[in-house]
Length: 150
Ligand code: DQA
Image (cartoon, rainbow, N blue to C red; front, side, top):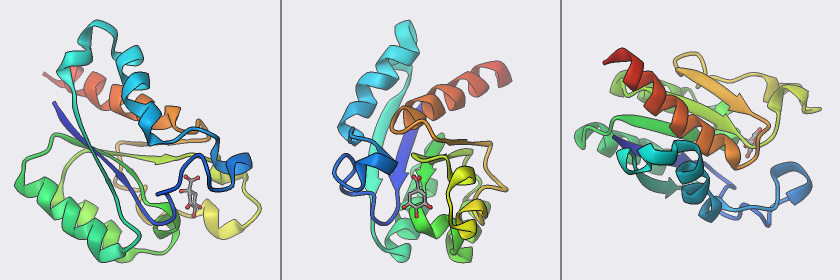
């Protein structure tokens, strides 16, 4: 199963950016967390990673995922979560099952705009507040759902 993990703007310096909010670990921790969660099935998922600070760059990469027939997407759209109809439109038309991930528990953040997601409605589900573990939990969830569907 090919899974693309996508990070949006300001997520290129995870572990360094406001660690009190976003945690001290970076994306380099994710493959090991996925291996732990997948156990004997670790070989069943192939991960690719992408980060962009631009809306167009994210959409171009998602369209490429569609061309490549990627099986699942884990996406943290960063602040575009709350603002980007363009990104939501893209996720809608490519039709690849995706899980939305947020490092922080956005529902508990002070700024009310963070409580709204334009991209979450079409997601299989959303994980928020687990730091980088959330990406690994999302991979495991996408794999598990596919097993039960087949
Ligand atoms: C974030 C939450 C967003 O509100 C914020 O703009 C981010 C990161 C998170 O992972 O908690 O950049 O998506």
